[in-house]
Image (cartoon, rainbow, N blue to C red; front, top):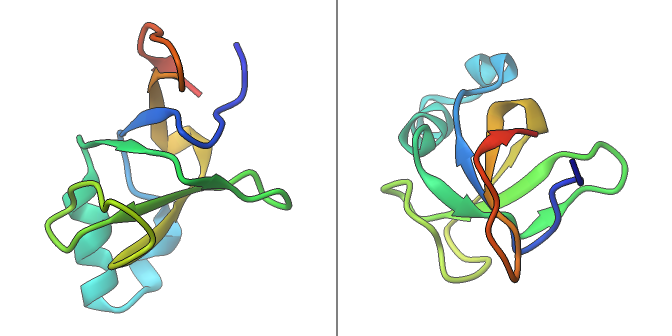
Length: 91
């Protein structure tokens, strides 16, 4: 199984425990994206965290605009790869 790359689409399946320490507004954004399928905009080179950009309602942002959130790969399922499809599976 290949690593998730920018442009791939993932389904968020959970919220990292560390989110519990964030302000209420941030926790709300994380909660709204659970179950959503979103585009990975970047993969952090140092940590491997996936960078997702979303609107306040948890839907995909067209670019780096409203909310940028970071997820560890274990909290997503790869749905499709850039330029092709794949079967859903844990990352």
